[in-house]
Length: 281
Image (cartoon, rainbow, N blue to C red):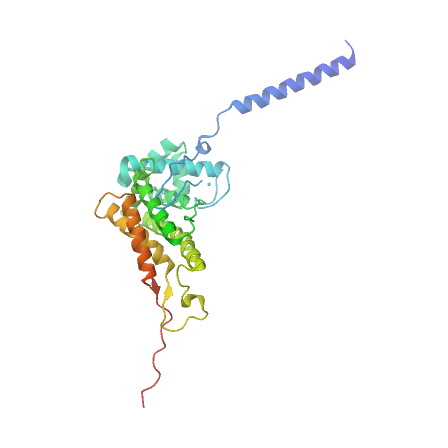
């Protein structure tokens, strides 16, 4: 055997060993704390709430585009929603989330603190989506579509239970309530685009809000109040009187909001007039 043959055999052996090493690494199971993936059945407490997706990172609110942290956060979110659906807020435990997410409970306590933190972050994650309000080309069409999204969110069996469970949790946890308020505030801010488009099309008056500064004691259009009024009667039936809702009721809520908007019901007060100075002569 020549020296050249020895070198060739040595190279082949090294290559085979390297391939075997890479294969064995690929076959190893991933760390349980990072294997969870987010399902599409995320909290949907209102129009268009979508699934969100966060290696150890400083706090559950850190937003990163992907990777192990995002997978872990999504797995925890899914476990929280499942637990709320099955047991309600009083029955949800950190141990349950650990078992169903594959994330060790020590990690859950360190990053989320307690059940309140887990529920609040699930809502935060639901708001980190790319949902946009309907754009049908008319104010009437947009309001109808928005109302129908709310109805579908709470009547579609695939998402209705988890959304209702999130809202129920907000009645039992102040942190969950704060997260729910923030979620809906951000959702309705997105919905204000419906009003802005209607003004641009001439379907609603721009009002003094388009003038800088606004005249004293004159109304401006309350876009947030307008879009909230679409879902208000639907939420009343869903969570106060516990009555069923359907597409016809959604259309009725949209029509009532449209009529109120055209009648000027959504005026917001402008700057208050200054108090009179001195006594009248």
